[in-house]
Amino acid sequence: MAPAAILRSHDFADSDIPLIDIASDEIERMRNPKDDCRRYHSFPPACLALLMSIEGNHRCVDCGEPNPQWAAVRYGGLLCLQCSGVHRSLGVQVSSVRSISMDDWSLEELLSMLEGGNRQLTGFFERHALSVEGCSVNSKTITPENVTRLRYKTKAALFYRKQMELHVQKILDSGPYRGRESSRRNHCHLERRNTTLE
Ligand SMILES: [Zn+2]
Image (cartoon, rainbow, N blue to C red):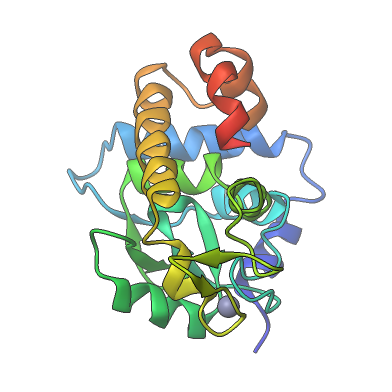
């Protein structure tokens, strides 16, 4: 099956309007719905193209499988189907999972994905000794088979998802969305947090 997300990202390649402008319009429409009062919407196409352009998002954050179509929303990470099942088994307090093509999304969840990213999350896990190579959690060695089960229940992962929540709330409160770089430029307090978020 052709990956819908990648096909859609190509739809914007020839547009004269910057992708971030189209995505920002989509986000503002979600924020101020005219036609209905729905809080949830399918993942808008320009936002989806933006999501797929984020570094690392072409592979599952936990196992490296290409073309991940599922989201660990609270971490802003993309997952393959198999790892999404493991995330579900962790419980919603630890991780909530959505399909980027089949599920509806709230604005907060959407922004969590646009401000997260697999490379960012992987870097965080690496700095907190929660990647596969030679790391352990509670004296258990992390392996490709147990990495998902082990690292999202750590204090470090809890810290990451709390920081993501705070960050998304700041972005929500700061007016029209202007993209990841702008988010980081315009929030001095976030610059300091970037040691952990990036
Ligand atoms: Zn995976």
